Amino acid sequence: MDIATVDHLLTTTRTVRKRLDLERPVELDVIHECLDIAIQAPTGSNIQGYRFMVVTDDEKKAGIADYYGKAWQGYYSQVKQSTGPSNPDDPRAQRAQQTVSSAAYLAENLQRVPVLVIPCIEGRAEKGSVVEQASLYGSIIPAAWSFMLALRSRGLGASWTTLHLAFEHQVGELLGIPTNFTQVALLPVAYYTGDDFRPAKRIPARTRTFINTWGSVDPE
Image (tube, rainbow, N blue to C red; front, side, top):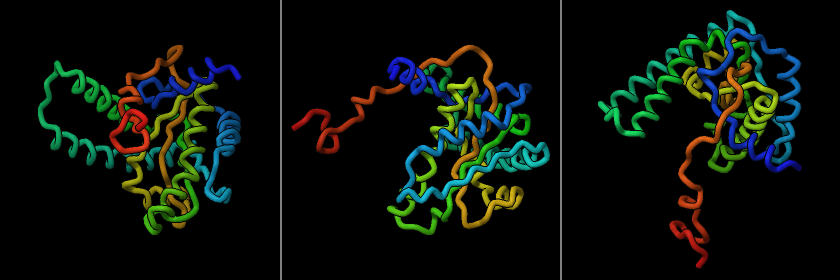
């Protein structure tokens, strides 16, 4: 296995918003191809209760975008109230502002994204115990992430979003998703502009990895 290529894929698969190509069509064949790869991910008890809602219809995308925009406005209002004025010279504030700008752009242009994909899993997360919830989400999120990796390797980008879940019931009615299925994300999918992505700046994992006892960074 070419470790360098695999590592590059894993460290440069980004949530893509402003670099989504809103003009270039996305072929359904590539979506199906990436989903075939994605479902190799593990599922709880190997039940394979996943479903993938792929939306290309303009009217339905506009309907989803309307609910998403309402959720974004509510979320953004909460963010402004909780953070208050920020120091423009603070690097953390700059990164936060970039993220907000990027998220706002996606909310404003969601209906223009060529394909929207909603990963779903059979069952209702809110009705289960902690173990059942973990098993339910663990049976779909790995596949959704594998889908994003497969897209990335083919020159497409996606954005992991969850804001539409504030209106999960309404979006489910719009698309005919049965109420006994849990929607876990909304993935806007498009080819991306530019040549490549770089690894993001992260706090080193070693500083947040504990050995044997919480808070211990060295073996006892």
